[in-house]
Length: 385
Image (cartoon, rainbow, N blue to C red; front, top):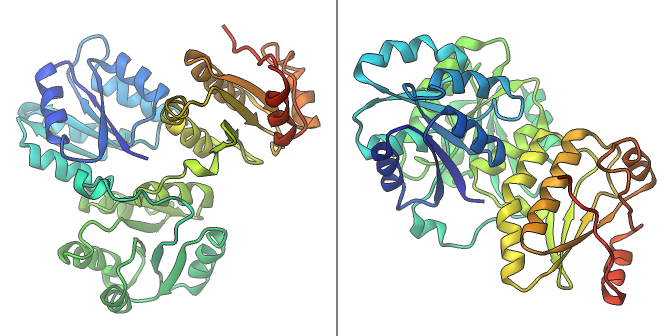
């Protein structure tokens, strides 16, 4: 999945500079002229980084930042503030709201790219044109942690993935490992003796082979000072203990630029199939939504005109999931793709409790749904107005 960078600035010149700076990299640039437009774009198509100007009409950067961090689905998006020279102190004052970094205008394109590369692992287009790795490809993960129980916990939490998780307990062992095998991602504890986590980070960044390797900081949730220091020096992400593994896996996949769409989307016998897992949280919703437009467009380009929405594994139905399904239905309807639903008794029953879904009908299996397409057209559930 291509990274998305949202630039929110009332200056068209600045937005042009941002687009030019990232022209040679594998990423998409989204543009907004004020905070209202920026929030709307972020909600519709969540970016991986927001470049946010402070002084803007309609809604300024401080207000947008506050609203962004108050939204459970958007609060984790890293924000880099853009400010004039006189506004430097202002940025530092609002850092507690959740600013990852800041840049003083006017700025050089190289500095902008460097700041963003500390947050997401964007690649030059020449590298990006190579085969895209997926969530089902193997990867080498290095965990640097002197508490064996934590290493075992991470290995167990990621055992369902094809990733090989290696554990070492010291900075020296980590450097030796990297000398033999270049890891795809490193998780380093910040509680190592003598600031070993920060020492390791600096050593990895000075080695040409690991300069762009994503490095996550492992830290106790209450250690806010260490978290802030890690963000300032450039760690790719902060993972707090106790670890929430669905979020960790998603952030690791994104940092390694892995295509996670195959978890949800597939093309089968001329039909696009969207499958949702047993439980659907914010991570899943963001991933499904992030791939939706490109997957539907690709399906249309390959001649696909029908889709199956498979929610048969769902254990419960709630409004965020319903909104996600309506989003998919509307996206399909916009390009004249017909869609039908596959569900289970629990989902069918819960649909009756919502006005917008009470008339939805379900097939019992994907195979049955495919067979219905082969026999005769079946009316699709209509999205809400």
